[in-house]
Image 1 (cartoon, one colour):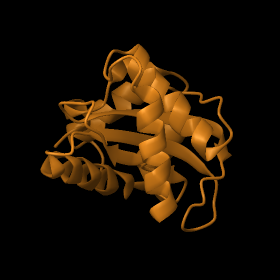
Image 2 (image 1 turned 60 degrees about the vertical axis):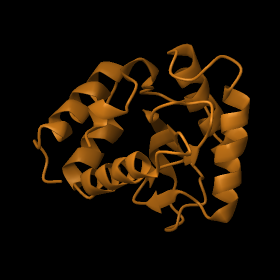
Image 3 (image 1 turned 180 degrees about the vertical axis):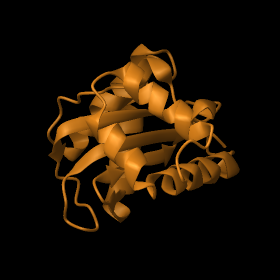
Image 4 (image 1 turned 90 degrees about the vertical axis):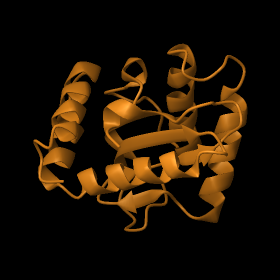
Length: 158
């Protein structure tokens, strides 16, 4: 699975304004709603579902990266987006570091395979230090999109 299979280009944010975990999730979910990837009025339910998932354990996986995700009946296919926080956000990460790179995923409950493949793709690509460094430095959604495309075409080591 590639980023292009699930990342909504229209919802990418290169400079998140939020400074809390819930704020990040809300800002990214609202971007997906504005992009038409989740139905109007469903954002709040998705935010609640992601925050409930966070209670089980932070999706801040370390090295400045978090992958907040949930399964939700309002979507009929896997959707996601990417956001960059220049300042970083305390996301209760496993390593205690602030998070700058966020990959948010929402998938239908009856498609667990897609959800797992997307998580695998993200974690594989994020093992590449160069990819992470470039993403953190991205100044615009277009730059983020270009980096995702390069990762999809195996430009990075992932």
